[in-house]
Length: 245
Figure 1 (cartoon, helix red, strand yellow):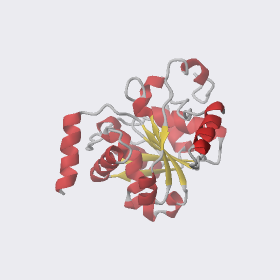
Figure 2 (cartoon, rainbow, N blue to C red):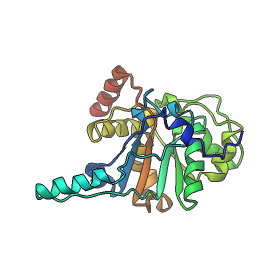
Figure 3 (spheres, rainbow, N blue to C red):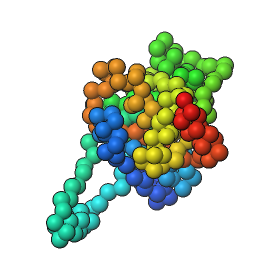
Figure 4 (cartoon, rainbow, N blue to C red):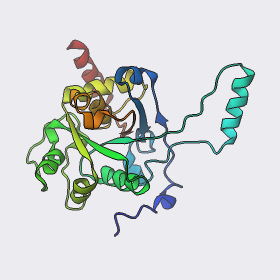
C-alpha cells in the first residue's frame, strides 16, 4: 500500500458528502487571524473517519461560477455589496491521536503546496506525539489523562514517520483551553463539537501559540474540526464548569 498516493479522492467522493469551511468575524476579532474551520463534524457519521481516509479533507464546498454570478446580481438588485472569498490557507492545524487523520492531511496538503505549514494540536495529558517529535523516536505513553478522549491513542509505526518528517510543529494545550474552545465553537460558530474536535481552535487561542512567532505569523489558518459526536450531558457540564470558574 502506498500511503503517499492521494489519487483515491475520486473513489470516495461519491460517498462522502462535502462539508463547509466556516469563518467568523468574532473569532477574527478575538485572534487577529482569519480562521477557516473545516467542519468534518458534519459528515454522515459525525466525524472525519467516514471518508475512510482524510485525502479529501481540502474539498471545500464551492461554486462553479453560476452561483457566484447569481449572488452578485441579487446583491446588485438590493444595492448591497457582495464578496466572493477564495481560501488561501497558509497554515493548517489538525488534531492528532493515532495519526491517521494528520497523515492524510499533511500528505495531501504538502503534495499540492510544499510551502504550507501543518501543525498538530495535542492534549498535554496525551502528548506522545510532542514527546516523540522532541526526542526523535516513537514514544508510547502508558497512561493518558485528558477530556479529549478521542485523542488518547498513540502514534503507530506507520504514522510516526509521517509525523516526524512532514509535520512542522506540535502545539499542546490543557483541558481548560479545550473546554474554552468548545464554548467558542458552540457560541460563535453555532457548532457543537466534541473536545477532540475543539482542540485546533484551542491551539490558536492558547498562550503557547500567541507567544511563538513561528506559529502565529500566519494570518490565514485552516482548522480541522474532526468530529461532532457529542455527549450533550457532558457538554453542558463542561460548559457549566467554565462558567463557574
